[in-house]
Length: 218
Image 1 (spheres, one colour):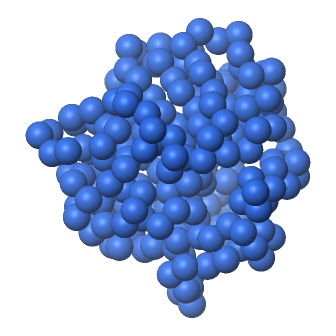
Image 2: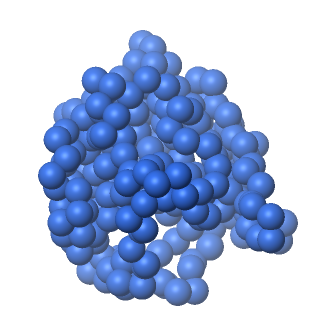
């Protein structure tokens, strides 16, 4: 499958996350493309005893951190080697499960509801949002939180872009205003989109988006 091959190539080129961050922590959540930068998991609200789904969980580093905070976590990634890496590094942590699947298929097939769904430079950026957001909404518990991040669009952007490094992968570049409108029309409340400036000496910002599932809407 061309899409799987593209993400396997991407996975092979990734540098493994450090054993500890600048504070000496063995696990942490990183929303941006820079180490030790940006907000932490507090934007997700309480985590202990909550169910969390990460779409595009990669090698599991972000999700493992949430599991250490008492969340019951499920990660889904299309690349089989990513699950292998995640299990090898984080399989000893309780409440943490990884699956290999295309995320749209997973959302359609699962009956589970989650209190939190996140995507960090993941499938929310690489899947047609008018199709994907309603699927995510159906898998969120009432009042549940969706949070995702990706690079903000450039001024000269195209809304839909095929990545040069992986022709099988299409990226949907949306502005903060476009995301909040799409989320509202897909049954989410309190949509919020913020641009996180890069650290000093860097030029690439990060777009961080959050929203809640409206109670009583399927």
